Every structure is written in C-alpha cells, then in structure tokens.
Amino acid sequence: MIEFLFVGDNENLFQYLRLKDQHLKYIVSNYPDLKSALKHLNAARSCIMFIDNDYTQEISCYFISVARKLNRKLHIIVLTGDDSLNNIRDIKEKSINDIMLKPLDKDRFELVINKAILKVS
Image 1 (cartoon, helix red, strand yellow):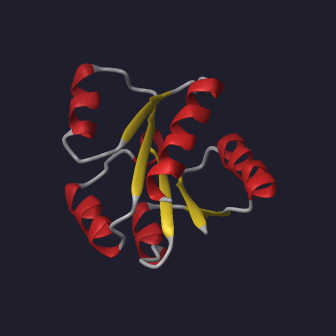
Image 2: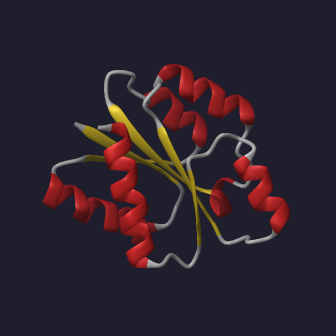
C-alpha cells in the first residue's frame, strides 16, 4: 500500500488527495511540519511526500537525507509558488524528485502523481 504524506496547510490539496484515496485506496496523512512527517515515515511502506514549500519555508538537506535513509522508496514532490531560478535551483540541489509550481495545473499534477506511484510501486 502507498502512503501520501502531505506537509502543509493547503486544505484544498489535502482534500484532493483524500478523494484520490477514496477511489484508489491509498493512505493519506497530513502533518504540520517536516519533523512530524519524519517521525511517521514508515520504512516498510511506499511513500510519496508532498511538501508545500510556501508553508514550510525551508527544506533542509539534513531532513531529506534522514528521510531517504528511513525510506529508500520515498518520492518527494515539492509544491512552490516561488518560480525564481534561485528557489528552483535550491530545491533541485536537495534531491527532490519533482517540483510543481502553484497554482497547480490539475492535469500535470495527475501526471506527476501517477509517475510517482509507478516509481514507488
């Protein structure tokens, strides 16, 4: 079973993932911060983590390295409203799998999710 871990406060996106959960039987969890998500990361389960960069502000390299050690199948998708080259470069340097710019394009978001599901399955 695949778990979607959502870190942020975007209620619309969280509800969208919950709807996907109802149709496809995934586990969807919401965490207020990266530390809380890290505590609940399950090594035995395939996980896709969505991090709202506008909410968390700073994604540390340390967090990413610890998360990847806890779960080798972890797929990380960062959502950001900052499309500046510096921000995108900074996110890419942290071994993030995908970056999505907000506002999210629903079709592209579905493609990214489906690609992540295939990768972790």
